[in-house]
Amino acid sequence: MGKFKTILEMIKFEHTIFALPFAYMGMMLAANGLPSLKQIVWITIAMVGARSFSMAMNRYIDREIDARNPRTKERAIPAGKLTSRYVMVFSMVSLAVFFIATYQLAPLARVVWPAVVFPLIIYSYTKRFTWLNHVVLGISLGLAPIGAWIAITNGLSWPVVILGGAVMLWSAGFDIIYACQDIDVDHQDGLLSIPAVFGVKRALLVTRMFHVLTVGLLFTVGVTFKMGAIYYFGVMITALLLAYENRLVKPNDLSRVNMAFFTVNGFISLQIFAFTGLDFAARYLLKGLG
Image 1 (cartoon, rainbow, N blue to C red):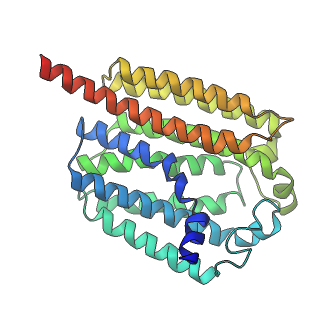
Image 2 (image 1 turned 45 degrees about the horizontal axis):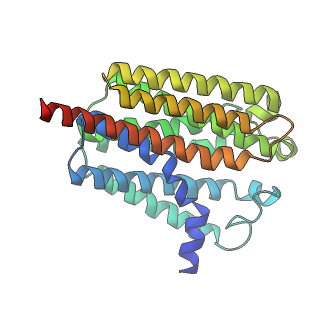
């Protein structure tokens, strides 16, 4: 149980909340409502497996960098709570869970799964050679609704790619905010990030630009899928939350980075998913009354 708790802490299991609601959102849009219980269960298992694999691999690949960073030196491997071998085995088990789940879904999911796994692995290496690593992370999360769409429809459509783009820009933006904490360590280790290369002030401007585009793409998703007023209300709340998130962090004050990164983003993903679901529910209710 001790190791199990350490693993949950290592992979930040609670942060599954960032991507899972968007996977469910893509799932509902694909099914034009709720899919079967079997599909919901296996998509959930696939998401948990993929994210657990990604986080464990990140901790394994970055173990030496984490040991030199005061902010991360107490993570499981640098602190000696888990061995590198143990984390690698956990990663492979998580990957196997993801692989098994994909084979319970649409046939196309069994073919395209490497396209999901590749960015999950390469992300941890990108900071060593490009400051666009935040975008790679964004792509990893943006694949959540796209993967769910494929799992339901056995195909791919541009409207869900727009949703994936919104998730990509949203998550790349908040990852830039989070990276502002590690500028000194990045310079010391020769690592690249937008804050380390361009400075905190310019980096936060990039985040704002990404988040403005996020709202625009979410609005476009609503138009494309002919969503109702309830969905657009959720987009409006998303815009307000993103504005609040960007106001929390200033170039000369990074003390509220964790609140911006963890708390606000958790609300963003949950509420837009909730309002999407409510929009579908209202649509079916009105159809029944008609």
